[in-house]
Length: 129
Image (cartoon, rainbow, N blue to C red; front, top):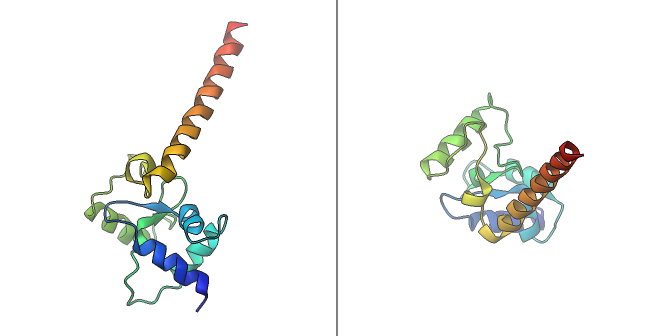
């Protein structure tokens, strides 16, 4: 098996119950920033009888990547809910609250807030002129 897959599985096993990590964060922690798709491929290649908590890995938008009709999506959501992870009405998980490791999401949340603030400032500036 691919050695990188083993590193991915090792990182995913460290995600605590009740927390989630994005594919991109897992790739970075496994030593290959930018290899988020490879993380998805590695998780989909898991054999049935494994101890890797694959359900704790979600996309960068805080959402389950499977389509809503997919049995895996229903299972992943149920497993996360059972561990105490909460979903917003739109279906996303708040990465600032449930993201692991938390420091990986602190800067992302701050960056997102700065970008929103900048957009808001530009809109207001347009209204003032």
